[in-house]
Length: 357
Ligand code: KG4
Ligand code: ZN
Image (cartoon, rainbow, N blue to C red; front, side, top):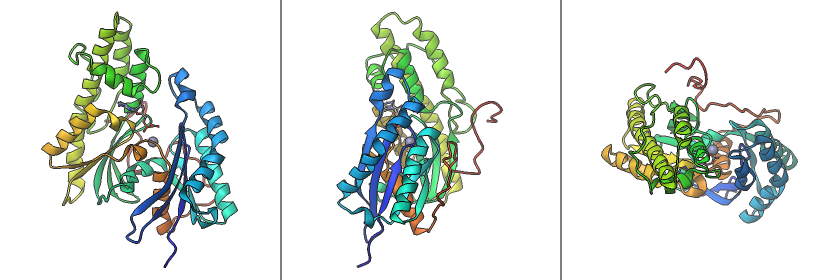
């Protein structure tokens, strides 16, 4: 029997230090042998967001034992590893450098190939870790760092249909939470506040609602919430503001997802329509039920990857490593960290002054 390919994946692009061992079965279905994640929420919550220097220090402190634990949990020996895959971008450069350099050294020590991985590609393929999805599919990635609609055509081929031109959606939840005195990361608490409030109490802006295709924008919302939050007098008004924010987000995602559906259908010859929603914000129950209803109305199957693979993790990085290993796409040890690394090279840069919608 042939030895199955075994990949060590390492992730440190933001505030999760993670390592994972992934292999595959005879049918080529990926199997996660271990998936170790250490979150830094406790370090950053007093600052209301991720502090890059503190995040990098924590990665440095933990990376050795996280990788060791991933190897131990998987019950393989380090010598069985066929390649090491590390996230090289996009992300915070001081954080990326930790996992990237560790991965390169580990590959060198084991004398196996090194593979650099685009973190967004990890998210794009992550549903393959626990479902037998067929290409192509439409992916909505909504996390603390990214908000994108991607048409995933096959491993290595992605078409970005839309992206945020300013804040990520999770960031918008966290900033709103901060203005309401909720500690980081405030997304889940905003959801529970919203359940107790009146969604029609405050009229909030819906930036680029009627233009820009399925691109997204959330910065204007934060400014409006800042103004209103200064006049909040009691708990009920906080609940009402959270509910109005939640409702506004649902309206924006409803409209933009319909546009993404039609763009995805235009560029693919679809036998089956599949919509995958990944990233931390996909845990939001109201967003989930709105998107599920939208899928039912538009004949899409909906897939929400399991929570373990939804947020940042290294299993998705090892999975991309496995795909690249099969294609013999290896990298040199001088491969740089790439804080900005678009998945679709044809897609225009969409942040800051001069962006055309
Ligand atoms: O993908 P993720 O776990 O990690 C990174 O982005 O690194 O996403 C975390 C984000 C945070 O902004 C958090 O506030 C948001 O997901 N989030 C939520 C909910 N649960 C997590 N936002 C809204 N509603 C939720 N239930
Ligand atoms: Zn991520």
